Length: 68
Image (cartoon, helix red, strand yellow):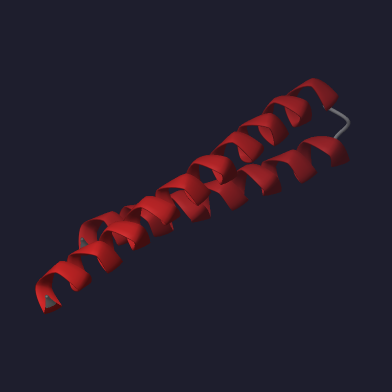
C-alpha cells in the first residue's frame, strides 16, 4: 500500500508539471501545445481523483475487516 501512495504522489506532481507547461506555452504563444497540455492535465487530475478514492476506500475496507 505504501508504494501505491508514493506512485500517487508522483502522479500528482506530474499533473501540476503539466499545468506549469500549459502556462509556459501560453506565455510563449504556443496555443496548440497549451491546449493539449491542459487537456492532459484535466485527464490526469480526474485519474488521480479516481485512484485516490480507490486507495483510501480499500484502506478503510481492509481496516474494517481486520478489526472485525
